[in-house]
Amino acid sequence: MTPNTLYCRWPFPYLFLCHSNSTNEASLNPYPLTKFLTWVQITIQTLFGSSSHLLFSTYYQFPKHISICSLSLGIFGSSLSQSPAMGETDSFFSNKSAKIFVAGHRGLVGSAIVRKLQSLGFTNLLLRTHADLDLTRQSDVESFFADEKPHYVVLAAAKVGGIHANNTYPADFIAINLQIQTNVIDSSYRHGVNKILFLGSSCIYPKFAPQPIPENALLSGPLEPTNEWYAVAKIAGIKMCQAYRIQHGFDAISAMPTNLYGPNDNFHPENSHVLPALMRRFHKAKVEGAKEVVVWGTGSPLREFLHVDDLADAVVFLLGNYSGLEHVNVGSGKEVTIKELAELVKEVVGFEGELVWDTSKPDGTPRKLMDSSKLASLGWKAKISLKDGLIDTYKWYLENVKQ
Image 1: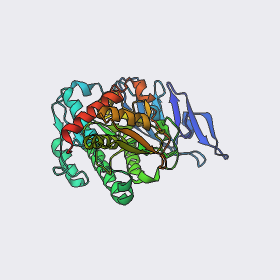
Image 2: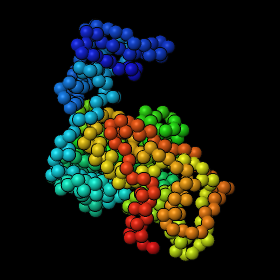
Image 3: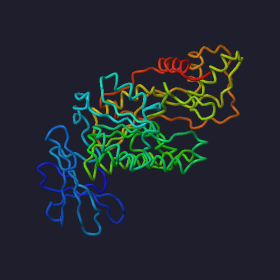
Image 4: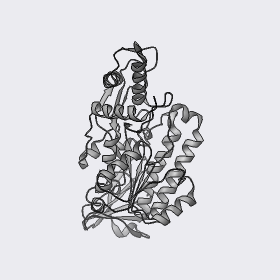
């Protein structure tokens, strides 16, 4: 039971109040409901799958030593931070003609989500390029939502980039992402969207987060300085979804994927991430007949990778099966060393030269793995193996990236 939260279990003869005492240690005491409420405002916050779960938002004014708290009412005593997740949104799968706005549909993530929705028979996807709709312009976004009135929104649009870009353009990374998120989430609520799914990144977690990283590690420590501008914006997006759910009862959820790869990835020679960078370098070496490829570090750090088509599958799953306050990690649950990854990419590309490790260069963070047990408990798991995903990605690279 968390501090500063009021709990009530049916038929609620007593109110259980957590508050801080003089030593700042949480204490739990039962009080009759009528003794402490000087005024109460109750609004229905969330209706779960059946009438057995009703969640209310309640505000109280108490003596100074008691914090303002929130009350969770329910036949089974549901807590707002641990809302029942399954069964609320089954109608998502039944209405294949529902309007679904996929913001950022040309990117790595957005394009995969479009492919997934189309494969499932959804026929009314709303897709807009940046030239068609600038998501940083509030008036344009408001007009789009007023005209189109989408039923569902997947927010995959974002300004992204590597370490150099984050360090060079910090104002752009925080401002543009905040503008996009604020405009889309607020317009979704104001124009009656049934549900929005906001996509973030594993960089939201502290630099020294526990491994594997659970959802509750958020805001538990300082961020990695090299991408904090982007991370702060994404954290704000999570909190905005939570705030709109708490205050307005708006069905806004967030998903945080691990390291992604796949079709439409960024293979830029300077700005790409480790997996596409390795693929490009091995391909170039094969074409040029090079004898070796040199990779920085010892190859010992552990990393987790998820094919973007698996992420798209998870996004659709969450749209249909999850409605809760807390964000959800999305990962493969499997980790490989950078050395194992490099050897596998080398094999898939068909480079027959030598792989050389420059151990004078830094390794980076020794391990980064998401704890995706929450999503697994809901019934979803990744399906695409790393090797199969690499084969698929290299095929796309050969067909689409200018050599």
